[in-house]
Amino acid sequence: MSFARLPQLRRALLTLVAVVIATPGPVSAQDAKAPAEPGAKNYQPASLPRVKRMPRYRESGGDTVDDPARIKAEGRAFEAAYKVYKDAAREYREEVREFIQDEIVKRQKRIASTFQSQIDKIDDEQVALRKTAIERLEGFIFRHREHDKYTPDALFRLAELYYEDSLDEYNKSIDNYDKNLDLYNRGKLLDPPSEKEKDFSRSIAVYKYLHWVPPGTRMAALSGRLAGVTLPRRWPNYRNADAALYLQGFCEAEMGETDQAIATLSSLEKHYPKSSYIAEAWLRVGELYFDNNEFEQAADAYKRAAATKDPKMYALALYKLGWAYFQMYRYPEAVAWFQTLIEYYDEELPRKREEAKAAGKEIPED
Image 1: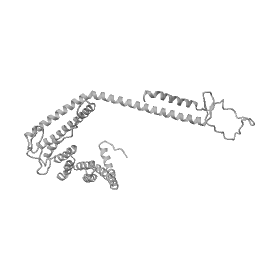
Image 2: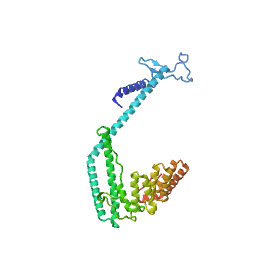
Image 3: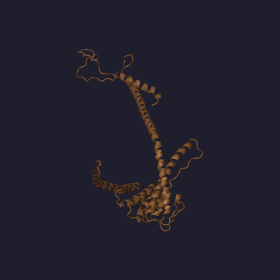
Image 4: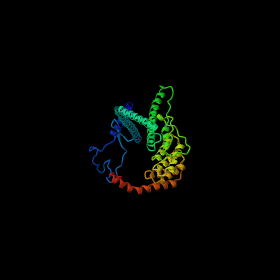
């Protein structure tokens, strides 16, 4: 509520007070005279019902007002005054809430600024340590390119560090993009800033050495201290080969290479049928199809995920199946899958409660 509304609010309050004061109160002892005797001019039998009169209002001169039109007009004035008062009170509450919210934001900024320098310092140290680890792993792989055990382990860890490093660079570029876009909109920059895309190609190039690839696949050269190097062998039977294949598909999906990601993730079950990533891989395939409005293909992928009976993914796969059929307007099938999900929860709930109880936790009753 702005200060300009205060006179209007004051007038509304005065009108309310005036109307309330003018409303007749209970009859006083002086007005409650004894009933007239029979034969008197104003005598009425006690058995007759008392005639109800219109409410009477007193004007400033003391005369009463019995005019229904005048009373109706006063009622409309009262309602109008009440509406003004109600609107002004609502605006006042809004202004108080905005003031409190602004104060909270100011305090949060003061607290953040106090610790931001320490946070930035820790982030810089983490980035430096990651860079050092990457250089050391690249150096180790450069010197030991064919070791059966240690080289694939070093490659797997290197791919993870490449991913973290690329993601950190992307996040920083987004922050810089927002700042530069603001400067451009204010006329401080001549050219609009360009938005950086996610690029996990370094990780993908490494992962391809650690899982099955089609015969004749050309291996991409590596990066950093391994720039231009193509390793003389691959490790398709590496103990984390299934994870490497899954993570490659994940990186491709994050980069927006949808078709390639679907092909990579769909091949996991075929080449590594005992992998613990199969259900999650099919769920990701389903999500890629679903986001592209290809609900039939999405449902097929969700079915493959549910078929694994993976307890971590089964309920989610059932839910996604119901939602996919709902999007195709195949409501009976959608209801059937949702019903299967409900039955599964009903069966699993007692066991979950026992596990939670054994762990010292508690699942609330329905």
